[in-house]
Length: 351
Image 1 (cartoon, rainbow, N blue to C red):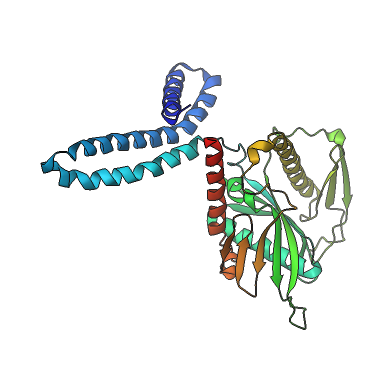
Image 2 (cartoon, rainbow, N blue to C red; image 1 turned 120 degrees about the horizontal axis):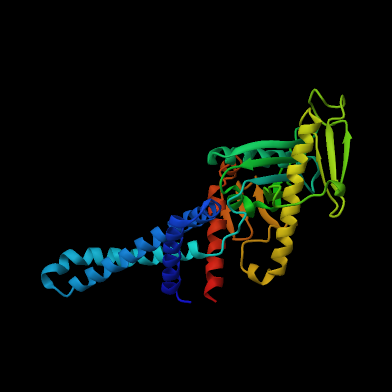
């Protein structure tokens, strides 16, 4: 189907929904209103595109008139040059959307290879994402933070709430590599360590049905650096989802009830993402050309402190401002990853 045909069908559907809303009963109004709210931005962009096309054609017709040419020429070229960008915006809006893109997200960071240095960088990276969330106006809630003795972290989990969080952060999943001279290094040698990052779309109870009988829930005394409740009460909770083998442990809160609620939140997200990954595997041919797979085993980025650079290996992007990135300035990287993914999907649509 050609683009003009797609746009005609879109406009017709919007008219149908508006008409249906006038006669809909209470049960239908919600679904129709939601559909219309999703269609309206695209309808507005199509109207802008077609108005620009019409104005370009009118200006072009005036070029043959010697008296009007001087007036019409700048307008014609401006309109002609604006149309490709408008068309690209429309094609992007028409692309199938990931249903999870509008959701909040669960962020999990774990040190991998590198011992204490990996734990230290995991803590620094976790803080960088926390600062980035603040710049976006998102709510960053630490769900679990298992600190190490030297100021690093054995594992950290956060819930990041806001519209479109997952769409922004989904390409952050993978292995992040750091190259620098550790504070404990006496001979000035550069060490390479790695940290794993997982970004999961937050799941609601309706998304994932969990049978209580499939869960094994253990309680134990919290341990780690600091915290008044550490080693005093059985407040820590470990939930094992027996069918999948997924295990989630939480000890951040003093309340066992709160730790259980947080653990269930992360468990739902992991099971939801596992199902999404299974479906994506079924549709694996559709994933060709996209930016990364979101697999935690994929090395995606290197943070080289001696050279002051951050390199994203998937798109060959290198920024020489590691200090700014570690302060939470991820927008340039995330924007480039999103643009690359959009370009790949547009190209796939055209095949």
